[in-house]
Image (cartoon, rainbow, N blue to C red; front, side):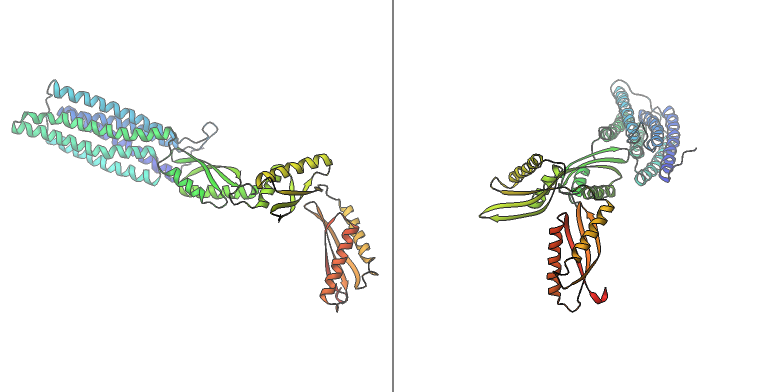
Length: 469
């Protein structure tokens, strides 16, 4: 099937292809002008344009490849192709500069070349300047709209070509004046102009070389890491940003972030924090973000959260936490849930481990009392629940002689929640009774039921008037 291109990819390819066409025209014009004038400055410009043509062709193919999505062999995409093409352009530019400098010094020190300036030379060079201005602006516009390192490098080349061509025009003009005014030293302005052009090339090449080397060596853009660091640091749910790493492939960034979150945070809460981090970073730059989460104790962590974290780290559950100051010493009381299959020795070892860690966190003088109870992992079956429901209803109704206010117990529901048995029921009473007396009766009934059925964690009685039952 033919490749489907986005609008950005199409415009980048068209701009790169137009740059190739412009480079071909400039090379032809400058080679013709070199033979027509014998100017070293024009020759340096022709060589520069030939390398620009090579660079434009490389840019075109690199843009085609760089826009391809990631695949099984290129997990981070093909974006670095643009950086590699720019690196090749840098080498070509520096080779050109070395040749021009060599030729210029040879003409200045060893012999004078015969230069034939003409009006045609000025016209052709002016046309070349116009072409360079047009295509540098076109490439710059596309590179800015659809970020492309290769197109940006091309645009930079052609914008400096304008100035180097202008310097060559000045050099040829100096030679022409020297011939007209019989001033021999003006004839060396052409070689001087060539040296200026080579200086421009070296300046461009050094800038481009540093940028491409930074891209190939995964150097983060200046200030980007600090911006990401601050954005992540202020994200809800994050205690601290511990590390930020950024690498770039083409126009896409790959960001690796390590953050700390409260150690008592649930997996769902930690995941929500990472989602917020990813959204904040992708709002700043086009990026593939990986967030690594480290559990940490907040500086102002509550004592109960510290105890829960200690138990959670050991794979245990605690509840009914309380803490008091007794004669200047901290007294901590809690319930520890252990597996039903544990022996007393095993359960006591687990409790002792928690006690030791609590003292390490709070001080050696802390008193810790741990009530050990079975986890209650076994979930009662439906028949067992129905049997308990009938038993509770029969038992409550049997207490009518003791609690004469009670008329009837019905709608008993038994369920298991978080490994605890919860019971609810309706009890009918005389509607004219004061609510305070009704409360005392229900409280007494709850105590009697829990005394009779110790496996029940909580009983909830809904009182209702007998006439509405």
